[in-house]
Image (tube, rainbow, N blue to C red; front, side, top):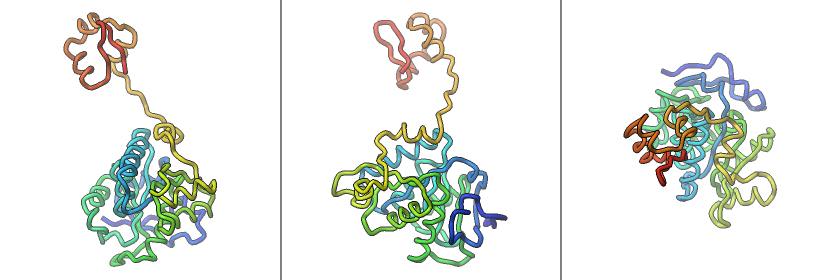
Length: 254
């Protein structure tokens, strides 16, 4: 069901050309959490796919929400890897599912995440609406991450918006010819490279460590015999899962 927001998110107050209204499907509470905007090319290389996915997962584990534009490529990777902790900003009205290649993803986001649009019903996406959509994507996030971008691309327009409103910009480090746009940003000192995904994600939230009776016991007592006497074959299941290492009749928590 498509709903109309009663008021715009506070993050959009910085925009000089803020939307007159927003429509949504999904969980509005997502707007009340830490958010990171991720954008990039529609045709990412395998390296970008790998590390964009790691980034989305790392943020999700910390309760951080990823904002992107619902397009194919990096946008879809960002949404999928952070799902359900993700917010999509569409360049068309919400009664239209576009692009069709992301049909299942967008439908899942409608059920378990949040999608937004500033467009009334029956409004298709246009080249201009994609540009306008970017200002909302950028404004909603605490920072902007550009995963991969050509020099003249929509992602670089997002960079201009981020610079205009004082948003810090991060990029994945690339080889010289693989992402000319992000490499220029690094060269000019307009962006900071993400060299450690976990370290970057830690800036926005911490992983809550859940208590585990077996791991807690093994932390205090490294004897394999004592562990097996208390927990039986569970100890060997933990070894297979990579949670512990058994060596020389000793147990080490990994």
